[in-house]
Length: 72
Length: 412
Image 1 (cartoon, rainbow over the protein chains, first blue to last red):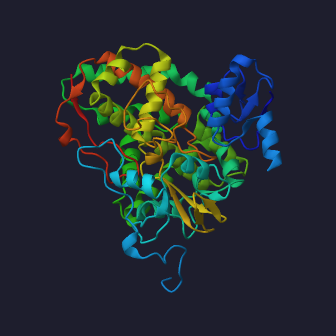
Image 2: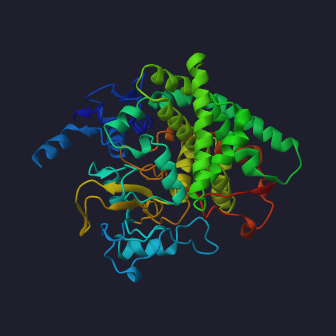
Image 3: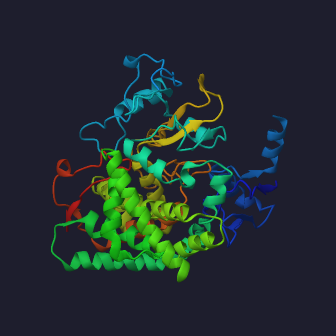
């Protein structure tokens, strides 16, 4: 499963870094999301899913969700 | 204007309840009972505001969250149907336009000028300094006789000292900016009082921005001043941004410290969990739970529909005002089992106390660290902390756009 972030939508709330610091970081200059790994290990996937849910700007999603959105 | 029918004004007056509503006597931590009824029976329905307008009030958690994240909902504070909290709030928004009351892409452009200072890394780096501020203030309290007013002695100074250091505002001016902030967040403030307080604060921040332009220092106002120098921001916008950060940076956190302490004192089993714990995870969970349980921004998030929106069997028309009641949303049993119970082990990170969507609180990482330091230190260092008066003698901020207590007399 692939993690996707949208730096254009990100509002730098930091929720993802608090939830899954192994997967998400923030740019030094403006706090915008940086993806550390597109394919996190399985044991981190619950945290990644929570990060996607908590993201206020809906700037994080998993590849399987992307397919669903495309169908709409 | 009376001949033009604004959206929603065709609703018979008698059927539309006034908003905000009143909390039940003896239940200072709980949202008004009428909000529970609306959530159960009419989760998206019209309410009547102070100016007679009848925006939609949204009370269920899922709807609040969905609409706050909906790009068809806007935050333009100058829109004629924007549902202002009070005459004072309307006047303040007219006088000073900031990123919280404009829409994207302008919102993103302005917000990103200051987001770096609130990144997780940056606020974590402030933790030792915040710990020292908290420890020093507790030392001062313990050195004197009780009772003391915890608001003046502790709850207000902690976030004020922190935001002053972050922004580069002299703390010596705290009486000035706290007094004027307090005027602006009180719903009973007249437009004239709001205008005067806003102007005083804008002039003050403008003076500081001017100083930072000539003598930049390592602080956030200097960063903002740099944007002025680069021609990306006017002096007035810069002062407005500084004012927003200064007010938001101390007013809300101060209320969470004082009201959170009172809530814990009234729930001794929960207080015991917090004061006995040295587990950062439990403390972090307690912070999230108190944010949810108290939801001090209790007058809802204010928005305007930019397009027609179908939701929950209701059509919100383009141009209609919408109030997202995050306080009752955070007490929705569909999202939080047994929502009326304060449970510091709950870790309800999906709460909407900081709002949701692109306008979600910019300062939330800082607020979290401040509250974690306070809650993990205050009750451990003063284990016998208790109210010096009865709960019925505590003056609550029923008239504030931000909820809390005006005074909290404590002893130990």
